[in-house]
Length: 63
Image 1 (cartoon, rainbow, N blue to C red):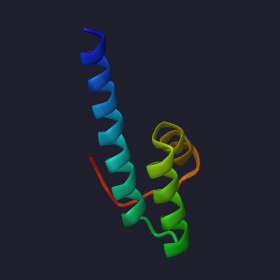
Image 2 (image 1 turned 90 degrees about the vertical axis):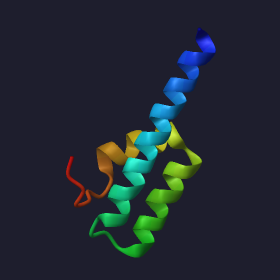
Image 3 (image 1 turned 90 degrees about the horizontal axis):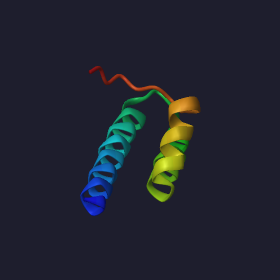
């Protein structure tokens, strides 16, 4: 049961990271800042996602 829950949490984090990277790419930020944000999310998936949610550039993606 524990490994199934861990897998679901990991999958949710992956989906949120992909969503954040898409938002970053579609944002109006400079290319250099986009690269920095994407690298932050790739190297620190959970912490980078939290930092991006608070201070990152916003994209044109609508849900």
